[in-house]
Each structure stands twice: as structure tokens, then as C-alpha cells.
Image (tube, rainbow, N blue to C red):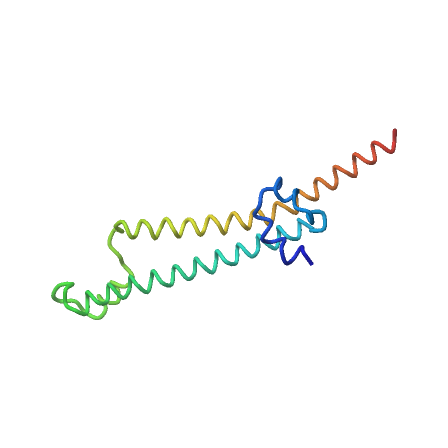
Length: 140
């Protein structure tokens, strides 16, 4: 039960700290870390979608406000207003911050997926190494 309730949260702690917990032996860390990685991936992906939705809505609204107020210049057609929603000028400081935050969310998502995938593979290798070591010690 601790594996699924506390394990995913404790999986963020360094291994040395996890081993000092009094109930560390009763948690199946491979399950906890895998669950933690998938949860982190899902939250990161949801945050990335939310950020993208908010950013695009803001940018499109600003572009349309400029076009509809007549500040975009004379001779602007409805098609040009629609195209303005898809074409943005070079990003300023806010655009750079948006890109940096988006890249950070993408990196966290990729890291979480890699961590979830590699933990089980590493555990299987350790288990095989232990079996080989036990087989060698029994042969002597």
C-alpha cells in the first residue's frame, strides 16, 4: 500500500535518503518510480497543453484586436485578419520567456518518460547479475 500512496512522492528523493526511511524495505521502488515517472509525464504534458492554449489565445486575441481596431493599416481584408492570427512577428522578451518555459516543460516530460523506462531495465539487469553471482557462489 505504501508503494502506491507514498512511493511516487518519495521517489523524487535521492536514493541515499530513501534508504534511511524506516519503511524503505516495504516499498517496491520499481513500481513507485515507474508510477512517479508516468504521473510526472502526464502532469508535464497537461501543463504544456494548458500553456500552449493560453499563449495562443492571448496572441490571437492581441492580433485580432489590432486588426479590428484599424491599427494594422488600411486595406486589411478579412483574409488578412485571419492570416495575422497565424503569423507573428519576431518574439520579444515575453516570446523568449514563453519559448523557454515551453522547452522546460518538454524537457521535464522527456526526462520523466526516460526515467520511467530506464528504471525497470536497470532493475532487471541487477536482478540478472545477482542470479549469476548466486550461481557462481553455489558452484564453488
